[in-house]
Amino acid sequence: MPSPQLTRQFRPSLSGSLITLIGLVFLCSLGFWQVSRFQQKQALWTAFARGSDALIALPRAATPPARYSHVQVSGRFLSERQFLLDSMTHGSESGYRVLVPLETDLGPTVLVDRGWVPRRSTGKTPDLTLTTEVVHLTGRMDLLPSRGINLPDTVSHDWPRLMNYPRMDALERALGRPLYPQILLLDPHAPDGFIRDWHAPGLPPEQHLGYAVTWFTCALTLLGLYIYRSRRVVTLS
Image (cartoon, rainbow, N blue to C red):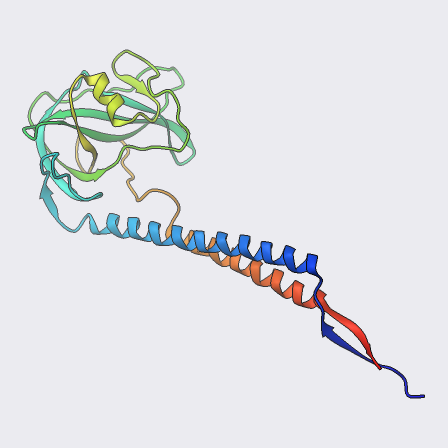
């Protein structure tokens, strides 16, 4: 009698198909989410690079400029009312970002970000001395630093006031005056500042694209394993 012939046929199980489908949907959704994050970050980093192209006069608060616009503004510092934003890092070192109000003829007071200073082991406040004369500043417009976790914004009630990721309304209450809706990131070459290594926020866009490739590769690997495990040996009569 002729020996039976063996062959492989695609015969997936119901449970294996359901698990694979759920896994593919999950992995692909993560991949497309990272693609979306890449597009968002690419737009931010492009806007940051474009912001250095032209220098404009800071408009009134009713028509704030686009984020990262390179602007110029004149006024006087309120040096006795400075803010220290806590939990700010530069490299691996912890410290503060220093915000000082600037009185201008625009209406609301403009908050100027002077940059980052390290946290001193002695606990003493860094030297924040400023001129009382009219100053002419240039910098980029940006939003206050923020993070997803809401914490109490006020850490101290003395001046300079220590605050932890405050919102603009909390700073307005502390000063007792309206503030411009954006802050000015003081240009690195300008005087009266500290360490100002400004860059677009978050991870570089390419890193999100790398994450997307990883998730899509995992999805293809899962699909390949599903096809391989579903090919069963059967006997042809």
